[in-house]
Length: 448
Image 1 (cartoon, one colour):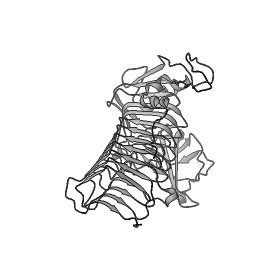
Image 2: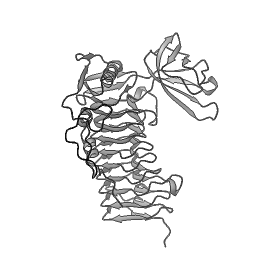
Image 3: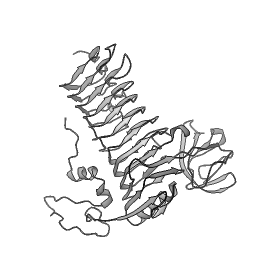
Image 4: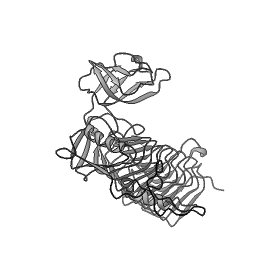
């Protein structure tokens, strides 16, 4: 198979160095019919060939000193909005702790840069209430049964059981005005929130987020979801970092911890680089390259004590998961619905309680995660007495396993190294080492 890789050196350089984002620069490569750009200039509307500026606007935000001083989300957001209005630059946070009652929302060309792990963004304790008045889809306000603890400016999630089909409805909004227990929202509901549907409001939100943005970075800080004092909001809506419909993103040296949901989640986002991050202690997923995300790069991260360490969602393609340490998760790496042509290489997966690497069954052959390459990984001490280190389910096929080490240092019990379900397709196995298992390979496919 053709190994997915960063074939474009421009893109590889961009993903490797978040300084590129801070500078807001890119260079257009020469082609056979176009001469090289040797002296780029700032030209109206042209972002492809802008000069690599030595200095861009920086705003320092601190809890005791800085251009902007404060310890909540509003002071950081003010700096982000100012930088974004002037075309990009850096919001530089000092060491300190900021308690968030709403998300920090990033924008094009903004770099959010901390001073290291002692720069901490922590979610404030959640408050919640039932609604006591019906709101229709065209309304832009809600009425709370108990408004104590809620403030104008809070990020909230409004939830109900859809009154038309019984499914869940989840709406993220901000409270922008108040009269007693009535609150105006920043945007209309566009869904029906009726009392018959058990409608509620919670102060839940992603801590750092962006939507329909590009060319931004989050670096060198800690984001704490305060899991003990907040209800669950899953990774399709939130996380310590949650991105939706973004591209060209760098997330580097971020510590994402203790979220009642995902650590770092991005949905329909392309060319996202997550490197040297720690994501641990989440009820959901450590890293969640979400539906439709193309060419993610996940390199050198540590993912511990999550439900799943690294979860390839739907239609994640041409990604690289390389040199990550993935320990003590229920499942180390999970690949499934149309997640094709990805390279999983050089990772250390240890002490998973169910599977080291799982290829999910999905709905049939057309929906499976084909043409993935698993190379030079080490998987150690997986699960219970009947655990499987690498489990390929459903009708998944065209997988390549080369140079992997599957190791069981406890008793063999009934443990299995590789298992291929009866309906799975072609597999290429070469130079793998499997030791300590009761059954190195369980191939359930019909024999020809």
